[in-house]
View 1 (cartoon, rainbow, N blue to C red):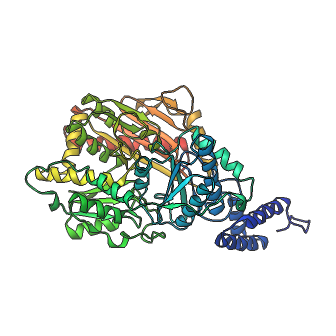
View 2: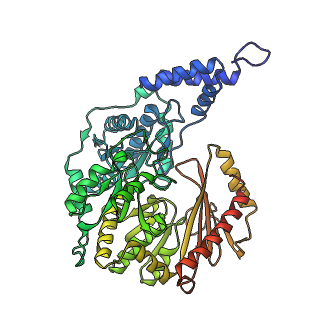
View 3: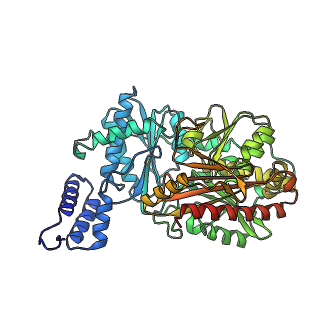
Length: 566
């Protein structure tokens, strides 16, 4: 494409094309090489979409952070591909060697997304090439099985190739250390530095060895046995657990094969499956966003449950580390918020006398704090993510509102949608034997501790600058009150607070609370809203919920106006 009046290529585009050609020469993958050839050919003819994609793909490096890597598949340093993954594996290996783990075992697993198996094998070869003991689970596997295997197998680290609940066009790369949790600072920056160093060499020059070891079947066997053991020792007399009628969806992910084995081992009833979504499919054909939280994501499950007269719907996300439930209510099927399921699981544990520390992230409801205090148990608020929750000393249960629950922290220091499923079925069965439902228990919790109504408002945008500008507006001119209640504003990015610095803003009054932050895994700005009523105001929950809903609406509109983003 020529600069006006010159008849020659623009210097910036010449540089872009040169960087792309150099990348093409280093790429060991014929598929992404062919994609890049096609992009270059189209861009050189002045094709605007091709040129935009090329600019985006070569705008910089895909950032490695505490969430590892996550982004769209495709050629270029800002995309997920074999070059980026190979360098990430080399950086991780170098970090492990530099921190005294020479010869240590590294467990590697992957989901069923496009290219996941290729990325996992590249990782195994490069880890092995650095003299570490690479152990690869060759078939797609739920993320919690790998998180379990870290400590069970005595690993110094683990990698899971997955983009969790992102769209089909994405993939990702989660990194865990030997304590069983995902990385936190400063390990993320130290690994990133070594990834950058690996990027100064051709991919072909990175050490590789095909001598990695396949994982033994005993890993999955042990996880299944452990998950099944979470069932309470005795069921209450009356309705047996096997009488539960429930629907399950794997959302085109990898959960079902393992879930089926756990159900059999625990003696739990088989579900009516959402057949269209039961088996892995990297295209997620029935779901543009395979996230149980997304509007419409459970439509097929609800239709199946209605036909089968089910008592309960349980959904796992595609890598099965998250869990959502829906319940029949007078107004139709009700999808519980992550905070509501967290309260149910905590109420069960606290009611059975489970002692230890309870934890939730700063964006989650404050209800768990209230419940823990009432039961005389310690509570901790953490930053967002199970990399923080899983590291809480003495943890007995932790969750965050994005439908992630750590139900067996002694074995899996991470969110686990499969053990959550076991806990839900166990609790639902015991309640049914008493003639009660999960909604009955939730209402009891809210009447006892006061209604804590939560909501989330999110704006999806590919413009990172717009998100940063919106956060800037909120920092510069925050509202002094929300829904008529004075609030204090805490910039969580400032050092010296109760939590490590993070890009988030907390606005809080006596009964209203808002946290605003950019998503760590998706191009979104997220706002987490809470309105709390006293126990006295929550006697009639129908009235209380209507009052809270009106206040949440007012809070949402105020925050939307300040952010001016959508």
